[in-house]
Image (cartoon, rainbow, N blue to C red; front, side, top):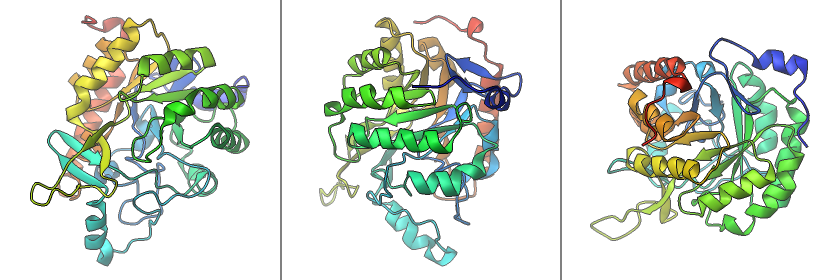
Length: 343
């Protein structure tokens, strides 16, 4: 059961005139970052200090409404990639080739299949979270049973006082781990949500019955929704017919899925879902954010369309960083009463 936010924790979260309260979720403003792209909000890697986006070197992450971590599991997980961070400069060419098996640029976006590679919840809470206290954080967690989600929630509860993070995001919709989450969703909601001392976000996929899942979330006391996760997709080498990704299927993100994300947010509102919605999918600029607000989103999230703009090179990263800062300033100025038509 969530406990009331303590006065001390509340004082830490009540910072700045841009603060946004979405029910019991407190953000510094309405622009957050999507899961995975910025790793754990900090890194041990000298080559990529804030995850795999060079753009993040030029944008203060503490200025975002919240930074969403890579999805964390009970035990460390290699997935289809690696948990290593200690790559040297001489290893960069090999690292980039390895990235090519789990991350590929496609028409209008990116296809990835990292498969929840992460250091595990214990290592994150011990080695990373204490170094990101200047950020507002959404901790993304994933598992293959209700018991695993309960364990993850209990570990976060034990290490993080109520009010110190924005939310815990339940990733029960990832295609890159080859698992049917619809079989466990109800038990996850029933058993793990009531145990959380922090607000819970449920991450929806357009490839599942997201309207039904959202209604299940409402009944279970979830605090908000993240819409959407990546879209299951496939690319084949036109010369050989072999899949581009090591997992064959991957998650499509970026500009190509923006119309899908907008549809999902709009349909959630049309279905009478009133939970706060953090929208993500193809957002690059202030106009994209405005569309999502008009569709019914309460906050928006920058993912691969923004953070991978200069990947894998660093040459344009400073310019892209300035561009992301402009989007951040524009969203800070947004006020719900100024929103345009819903259709």
